[in-house]
Image 1 (tube, helix red, strand yellow):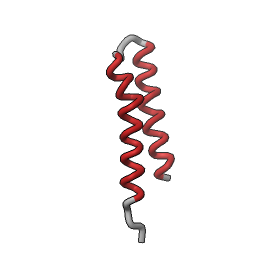
Image 2: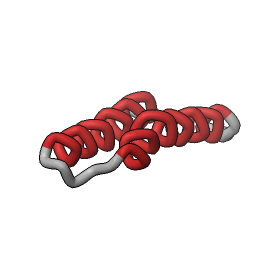
Image 3: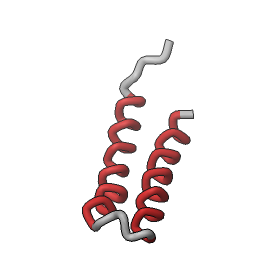
Image 4: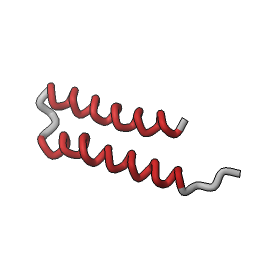
Length: 55
């Protein structure tokens, strides 16, 4: 489930920024965040999940 959460977040943000960029509403910094920033968030979320203790 958590694996799909990271993929959904990454693709969701990228698709939203892609649509906004096609309409001329997103600039370059938002595209950079959609690419690099969301990837970093997904990595940090995966590390957080690895450190969880499941009982």
